[in-house]
Amino acid sequence: FIGDGNNATIFNVVSATPIQSFLVGPSADNQYMWGSLFKGFRINCNGGAALCDGLKVQTGVTNSVITQTVFDDIMIWQCRTGFELSGVLYMDEWSNCKVVGCSYRGFVGTGTQTAVYNSLRNLEVTQTGSAAFSYYFVDSPFTGAFMSNVTCDGCCIFSIPYGHIDGLTVEGLSAATVPTTTLITINQLAEMSNTAIIAVPTAKCSTGILINAVNTFVHGVRVPGGTDCPNKLIDLAIGSGGVLSNVFNESSAGSKLETYVNAAALPNWKITASPTLTNYDAAPMVLQSLPVSGIGHTGSLVTLPGASGVADVLFFHKKNAANAYNWTRVATDYVEANWTPGFATWAAAPTLVSAAYTRIGRQITVSLVCQGGSCVAGSTITGLPLTSSATVCGTATAHDNGTSTIGFVGSVWLGGTAISSIPATNFGTDYWTMTATYFTDL
Image (cartoon, rainbow, N blue to C red; front, side):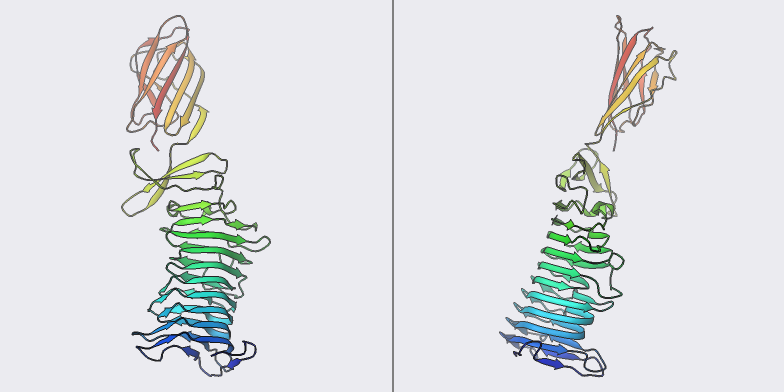
């Protein structure tokens, strides 16, 4: 069927109860539709007392298919559901189609039969009603679909295995009430690129894009300046993973990703060229998930280059059998500071000149300079800045800086905060130095 254009060929549907305006497809099982063309017309679904549904494409249950069929230049006006795609659909195309005013769904995929390798391009859903979705592909087995140049003003869900979306724009939310606080949800997509979110207030949708997909590539998300923006521009579901790149938020709204994303979701992601999305983008942000063992844990080592350009290294591991997760810092903590030693067990406490320590990762090196003092065998120096490891001991060595050769060797025992096992020593009035090296647990 070919009309004279959607402003010239108009079907006005009049009904007191909701009905399906157009139903396209084989009328029974064991039939197929091949190479058909539907083009150039408009369906007004509000001619009567009830809003009606627009155009539904549907096959039979057994041995039926619609293939290489094109739906082009079709407008659905003031409907419940605009376009419904159901049944076995193979390499069909929807292009230059528009829904103006839907109270339930703009484009929706339904049914349980397989829809494979279909194309949807140059589509628009506008005046999306309260609690309605512009695009709703949730329950349908749409596989490998390609969508391009798709626009709307409502919430969307795309659960399309191996699917591709290129050029999705959501501008404004016309409805007073939205069906969900997440603007766009993607699940199982292979790729989504060149997405624009314009004038979407966080009061309606606090999350811009929720990614619940594995091995997916999300590239080129843009929020123009001077517009509203969801507070959580992109959220990552636990178990998701892939590459997230070139996210650019020109608006002043929105929180940094690391302030709201569950840490358990991060190890499977590589995030690059997105400084307005996250502070961990100086290098740019690289999440390297590497097997690690032999340091008291097994799991994944995740590197997050910090905003200062100095890398933080986080160790991520399973916490318990219930698959709860936590983050632990390793390897690159660097601290230079003072500490306060205690000489309560000494017969005569020395005069403290200075005491400092350096931390590099788990390794702690303390030093002090004193004058005089004497102690009996078994004395201690307390007050170490960090508790010693429960598995690795440390050692301490002291040297007299005077003319004598007086000194001692002590130990930092497991889980301790003191230098112990110091032998009987008398420094007189000489200056002396001591250093100790030990490890701390994370």
